[in-house]
Amino acid sequence: MSDGARDHLGRPRVAVTGLGVKAPAGNDVKSFWSTVREGKSMARTIEQFDPSELPVRFACEVRDFDPVEYFGPKEVRRQDRVTHFGFAAATDAIKDAGDLGADPSRCAVIAATGVGGLTTLQENVTAFLEKGPSRVSPFFVPMMMPNATAGAISIHFGFTGPAFCISTACAAGANAIGEGARMIRDSSADVVVAGGTEAFTSVVVAAFARMGALSGRNDEPEHASRPFDADRDGFVMAEGAAFMILEPLERARARGARVYAEVAGYGRNADAYHITAPSPGGVGAATCMQQAINDAGLNSVDIGHVNAHGTSTPMNDSAEADAIRTVFGDQAPPVTGSKGVLGHMVGAAGAVEAVIALLSMADGIVPPTANTEHLGDDIDLDLVTGAERDIGTLPVISNSFGFGGHNASLVLTPTA
Image 1 (tube, rainbow, N blue to C red):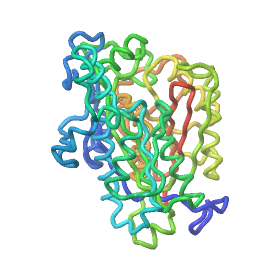
Image 2: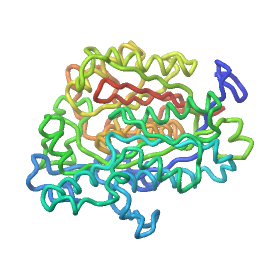
Image 3: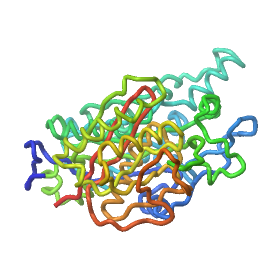
């Protein structure tokens, strides 16, 4: 990477100046990061609805979160749970970034989600079928639409630049940050609020369970998510949100902002293979990772560790392990899988894990992968387990791969 405010291709360097999270591991960055470093699973029996009739009765839920702290009591009822999380995390990130001092027309919002207001959708469809059309809420459409979170953020803060939603399944959160970085690079925005949010319902849990995608360890939920483990049997449903504030490094320095790190590389592509299964050998994922490394102006040997997508599903973990070996060969760096602690937040996963990757790099450690005891025979990785590992402050790559064959990788680097 070049010195100064521009990268190896002459583009503005992209600084991260604000962070916000609402997650099963904590509702602020400090507590969230402490729990992730402990490697303690957050999976518990579901509390937000009665799961007794479901084949899978546990998940990783956001707890001790009151959206009224971010919305008035009346407004809370007019926003879906997914917007509660996303708006709150974005608000925290904006506050963390300090006085942005930016022209509102130059401030953009990219809020990713897998589907959108599923709680609103399920409740209103149920009301319609059981009690008729008069019981459908007049706020149904604005509450359920996937772009509601982006709209809520832009309206509240008066940001009149682009505000939109990315919905690329489990790659969405990483795509939001990557596309936000591109907007900073091409000077189409001075500030981008980028991240992802997700909430689940009983129908979603039932659907993923019917697919065979979820772990069925109802008797030991805290041991259910086991990325890359020989006994992995599916992912654990989760919810939450994470947002970053992105701006040109030169601008961040001029206003005296704290710079956490840089988004230096971004790769995205499609497997074009199958709606749910990864391409054999992780070919699409490997190409995506290499794109991100090239975009950062780095070589594979420069990467200090990999924050893996690591869903704890047999096919996806195997394909990602193959992809990592393809990109790094015998010099593969340490790998961690955050979903052992957090479960799978779908559209928010890539954003939450990018925050983890950034904090890992800042502290020079790789957090442990919860629950993984014995690597599968198909897994040839240096997976960090048991306790965190000190590695120094080195660039990190964070992977996100989603249904539909969507792939996204981010390279984060320390700021010199």
